[in-house]
Amino acid sequence: MLNALEIVTTVVVGVMVGVEFSVAFVMNRILNALPEDSAQLGHAHGGRMLGAVMPVWYTGSLVLAAIWAIAGWHHRGTGLVVTAAALLILSVIMSILLLVPINNRNKTWTPDNRPADWKQQLNRWERFHYVRVAVIIAAFALLVTALT
Image 1 (tube, one colour):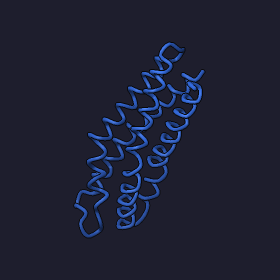
Image 2 (spheres, rainbow, N blue to C red):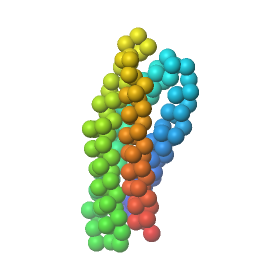
Image 3 (cartoon, rainbow, N blue to C red):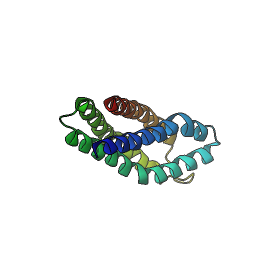
Image 4 (cartoon, rainbow, N blue to C red):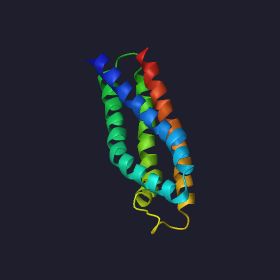
């Protein structure tokens, strides 16, 4: 049973990392290359869509890592899993304090009501997102290492 938990946790976190990496290095670049109104509307739509899914994904990943750490407490690699869980906690805290407030504003914007500094706010979100992606990549790497 522990083996299945390890695999499920690693896959769930790995897919989350892939989605967030894609947002950072593919989707945002595509959206930013669009004409101004289209770029802003695309960011708002992405903020609504991923803003609904990612909290469950981040929380679920953290819960799975915590269960793995508890269930495998006396097994090799538990320290790596605990550290990965700590990094996932950090990513959730970063999300709540830094990224979600910007996203909550962004997802309501239209070309008619967006603030004058909307691009600066999205750039700030992107910078925070790059850091969060690095944090969850580190967590994923630790989980993969704990499998060996």
